Image 1 (cartoon, helix red, strand yellow):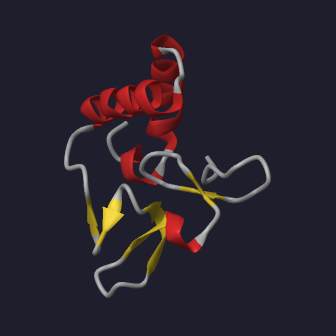
Image 2: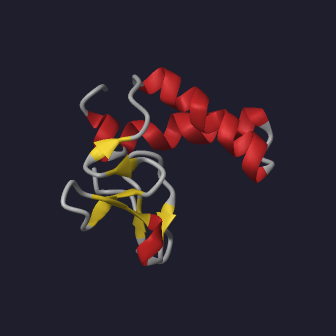
Length: 94
């Protein structure tokens, strides 16, 4: 399967699926350089900010989508369950 991208071919975080369009959207590697795979919310200084297994991560992302983006909970959970398992960080858990 291909690496997920935005409809216009842009990059998405390979942990949460967030579109990354501006430099400040990207996380940082251990040396402070931008990570081209993970967003600033998921990856800082070469480490994942949320250290948990996929089921807990899906629940966390569902809650964020409901509270911050106003997405209905059933739609947010379905979207997370469809997207997250296909991202690089989580593929090894399938």
